[in-house]
Length: 353
Image (cartoon, rainbow, N blue to C red):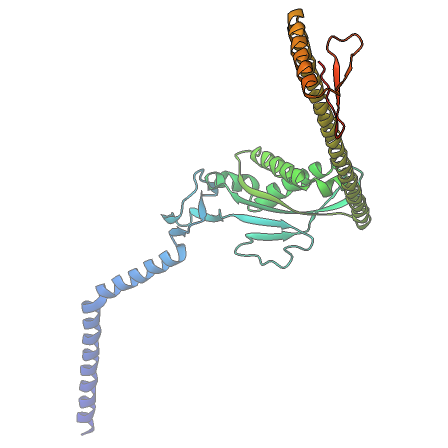
């Protein structure tokens, strides 16, 4: 029995070994090639995921592709771009409008958005024409020129705005403000703002390859020393008082001129009226004299004799009516004057020429 049992177990062990060999064989022969494809795909996916042979550029950005460390002269525009892993890299640069606030208190609490698209800095310290300290608040808006981005980054680096914008603005503000006194700065703000913007544009455009496009330069404020501000306020008050006095004097002069003009008008009216009356009297006198001259011209000897005859006839008629009539002869006259005297009524009649 023992020998038989040993033979039995030995046979079973050999059969199990054969079955297990058969299973291993079966798995290898049926699925070996398929497993290799899966493994290869996984390896390729890992390689792609790690190497990332493409880049996506969004709007408001450009890509600067470098091949073995050398920048391509043409920037990559927004979109999907393939690159050669390990040999090429793409540096994504923001080309949206950026802003720098140079301010002592304004803009101090403003947020900085994105990748420092808004930067707050201290106000610009300068001196006026008399070396008095002045602070100037400026807001500058600018953006990187997308067409020249590779050359700009290659020349100035990623810190390009601190190397281009800052020096230009500081130099221009100091140059322009230094030409004016503190009193002039308070009253010539618009002139100064225009000069700062024009000079800033001129300086930025003069940079090689025109790396930056300047959108605007706005003068936000000029902060003067306290004693200067007080002095300017006193001067302004004095000027306003002088202007008010000048206005009052001018107004009084106008009133005086108005009254003088009115009096002159009344006097001229009286003169004109008197002159009119005098002219009217003269015209009347001239007319009377003319009439007398014409009458005198018309009197002749025959006319006088006719008048004498008519008067004599009236005299004769009067004597017939009243016998008590008294006759008076005018000395040197040709026609007598007749007076009629009745007992009951006295009446005097005169005939003369």
